[in-house]
Image (cartoon, rainbow, N blue to C red):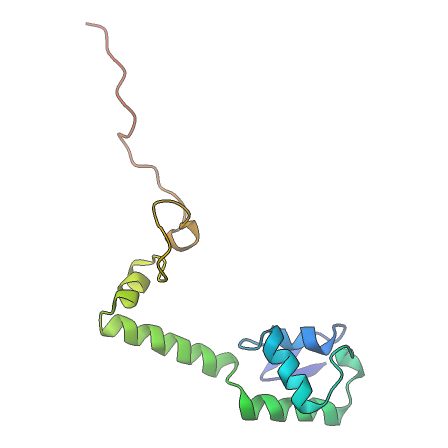
Length: 128
């Protein structure tokens, strides 16, 4: 049970995959970390020695921003965009896509569930 950056990484997985469970470390950074620590990427987490775990912790703490610090940084960046009323900040406030995607269709992830607008169908002709 290895604990790195406050995250318990799964013991049964290969180290290169298990490191991606840490927020801020993807496949590319995982490979770079393992190369810097001189650890074989395909070894299982449960097979790591205490010295190898410590080496991983040192490399990550020294070179990478992860978990809470990174989330705080991202949140502050978004808050700054909102405060200065930048276009991207306005899109964040409105809950709309911020990177130029279309919103007439295909924005359901950001906009949420579709709400039907009443009165959209034409009225049926009534008998007089």
